[in-house]
Length: 458
Image (cartoon, rainbow, N blue to C red):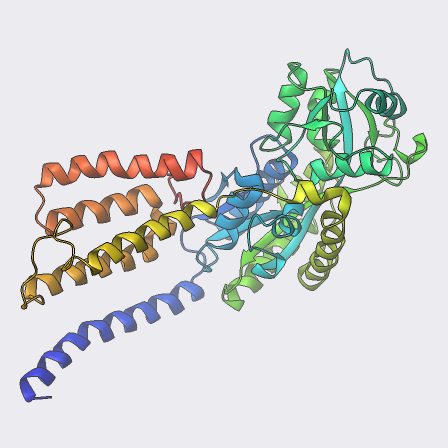
């Protein structure tokens, strides 16, 4: 290499070295000063359910203890894949906390995602609530035995909901059917994004049954709009002594749903330790908010809590994963566990399309219709600059998408690339305004593919 080339190489390396030093300095500083900006909690289910209420209650206490805003984002869809993916695949910097639920130990058994409990750093389990079966106030069913007899005579006539298809409440109801000698699909399951909208659907007469926890239905239950036929617990719940258990009705079947707090794998240990200590302080009742502690407020909401910290929580996740895996892979649930397509299929199709396009570009010399003739002098200064710009755009997306969201980050990058590559600014803006929201709507809204929403929620 001649001196001129070495000089250019040295000059080119200096900015990269400077950036790496700045990045390293910012990283250590951010850990030392954590937290110094807002934190997001990703909740995988809709507003109104036990998981959402737990997330928002915890957020208020975390905000007081950490001194920064803590926002709850309901990332629903994909049977829980969307929320769990956004929470556990976020940048491991402590600014995105994940609320995980029993579905995390189910989704990978159903081939819906590769995520498992090993992709989470367990902090604390929070709610552990037994499943219960609810009917509308004017329903003809007065007990679980009456419901069972009707289903036996009329398989497939009743509809039920409570969560996504194959979710924990679906598993609870289907498990009871299997236990009773019926088929797991003798009650048609209508998938929904959580107990909140499911109970509203029941109250309006849209479905015959809802399976969820008693605390989730507390408001409608206490107002008399719904009735509870039984709870899948070994003994009566302290807050709902009037609700009979399945066991007291001659059905030895019990199952519960849980949720808890976790961090993405790779989060720096000092941040994990800080979050763990703060959450332990909150769940132990040391922190008060307007004279009330977190356990007191959870009890007032009728939520059954079970606090397992760190290693104990990790062991619970491991055991629970094996238990649910054995159930989901059994013959009774093989149909429930199978699927045709899922949210990860569509990015795969997009990747295949990109490969086809690149393949066409690779043979452009042979197929004149694909591109004009290419001269021997194919490497030009402008071509190198354009390649570098595209690579910088990819790096910028990886760095900023999680914080700013897909629309803002991808929109800014696409506009700048189009403009720098020679497109007029107004045409670049028009293409960006039409293309980016369209892609977001297609994947995030219609196909339920997890895309970063950022601090603004879009």
